[in-house]
Length: 430
Image 1 (tube, rainbow, N blue to C red):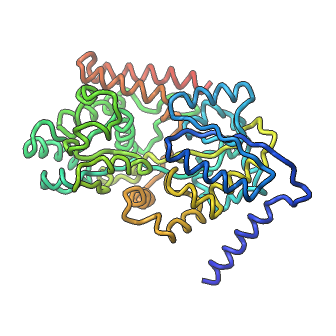
Image 2: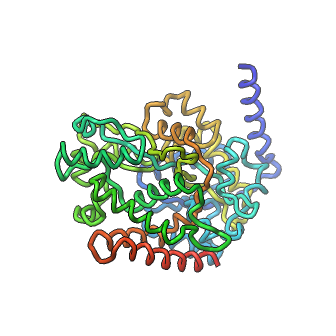
């Protein structure tokens, strides 16, 4: 107990020590941008108001939008050196915006104004490029299986622990519940991440060789990659991309088969799973399932990443004040209380402890349970942000549709995907 009290005193002292003296304070105006929905906008504006009470010499102009168009707007601003001082940034944008690590301010140079000790070094490493910390990760997220409790009870089988059991579940669902009920539903980006998990478990290699600027899979491995997708569709594990597209362009969790339980689960980010759970027809709930493993696998192939980060614009004229704002949002009591879980389970140790003590973070929450499982799974191969490039993700969706519609064989689709993705990598990594 004494150690915890002492650690708390030291943390508070660091925060106070980071504040400039009254004699040093000058009026400053910062701009902060983020994307999100109304709930994110509301809690962030509340946190900014609290920050300005603590730092009356700093005014913060909020620039918030929805998701659509946010990246295009941001890249235009950065190209013109007119980007905001503080930016909410997606992890997979770093290769595009900061390939050499110089697209944002190096947060390691601003440690006097932000307590980086609160964040796991492994997470900081994922947003460090050539020794430069490009931002502070807000939360971490991982793709895991979540199952509709009611649907699986009707099927009468346990959640699969191996790939063979996952394939067998599809056949059981078809026999017991009919053609329109599936164990899971996977959008194309979900399927891409799941297939990667299988390949990592089997081959223990990174999917992308960044030195060669190409994927590391052989022709035979690419065929195996897409053959597994075809096998899961044929085994009735999930609806094909063709069938999924027939339900329109709304969000998956808004589609009727999801709401009524015909799609019995999903492979989804733990940080966003609550909105999938909220749309289920009661009394159905979502339960975290095991991560399927191959016998003898030493790496789960888990796709986990920082869900987003707060960065300081490279053109900012007030980097210290920008770092103080980030520190307030992620480490201070008022900032943490205001933001809550709106941007996921916080990585900051002081934020996590505060929200846990306030019973905001509960072990039974699907998002929290998912993080705990992710921490226990074996992990050696680190996913590349280039694997999450929007062009590659979109191309995968087009490729599996070409298989489903019979336009290409698995072998043809695999070789075309290899050629096209390597072309993309050479272009974005040059």
